Length: 84
View 1 (tube, rainbow, N blue to C red):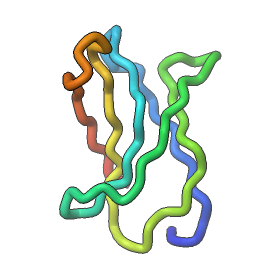
View 2: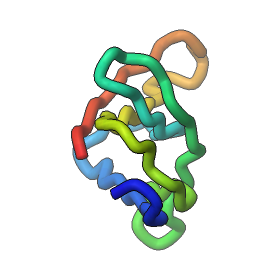
View 3: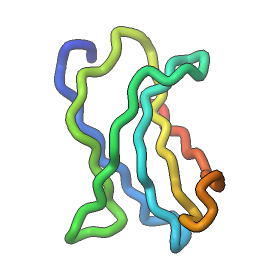
């Protein structure tokens, strides 16, 4: 809902080890990135990640979560798309 602060929590319980989520992006319907936010891992529940609050865009968008699967290979990323 445009104009209302939004909060996102990502459950990564099915993510293969040693994968870690690093970034949450808002992407328009054409694949253009609208905004990017860092994800923070919960200290008590390591499979949960949160992004800082944000104001959603006034257009339809996807949430794209970037999964750093192998940290030793910086270009090796999997993308998980979630529509909200």
